[in-house]
Length: 351
Image (tube, rainbow, N blue to C red; front, side):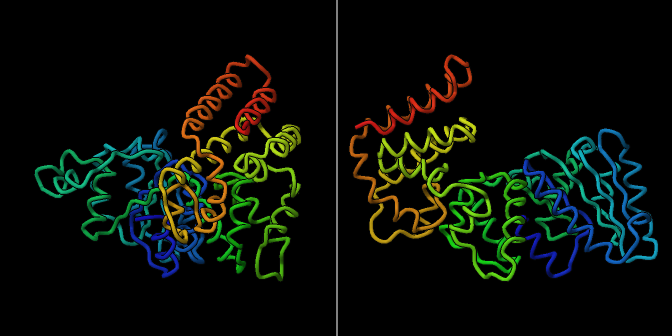
């Protein structure tokens, strides 16, 4: 089950007895815990019906005992287990997951779970292999069999996925963010869900009564200069406009982290390289854009006029070497980070 599948399930107000929530994006995982808990408890008193455990501090038997208890003046109770991977080999917890209490929602939160390929999943369904299953494998098997458990992975948001997530967040608040504004927003903020969510709330609060978010709104409410920001730096480098790129980089180094600027320049040049070697023609589709790391077809359309500036295939060999050297210089502190970035921008935009 994906996080979007979970969101649809919650909108339909249906809950399974067991969820295994796992992945690196802890902010989204915690938000899912809150949403599931709120739906499960309803008007019930959380002081009686919500219990939290930690796998590194509690025994599996205590978790099972709590999960098997009856709700108090509520339809359901919720048991949350953080660091659930610490209890993944517990026979007691595995037995409970295989036959859970329908009056309880058990939330197992883990950073990593044991991988289960399709072949292993099929083998796990055989009685002879059940003894070797850990809790995560039992959950995955039950999900495949249409049972009472599901595993939901929360992956770090990257590039196109981050922009799509931002779009959905604004839509749920009754606002439409234009593709251009969404691209600008993610370029300025990054792809960390917590940081994106914080800035989304800021813009939503400031735009009460409006219907759409435009690029100018992003500049205004994020307190960023229209002319001097990482978005414009990337554009200037793509256009091979050395004077403008150096001017923007100089201004940005007063407020931005050099490593952030380095990462964005690397990402953009990688996209340019992919666009150049792909040889895609005709009107760009969103699918073609996502294939090279963009989110929307219009972004690829905007990039194409600049591809002629990168006719020399050896340029990319050199520019990736320049980025590697700048990264090494910053990390080893051989030169000041600001000097490394300015030198990099100059080398990337040379004739």
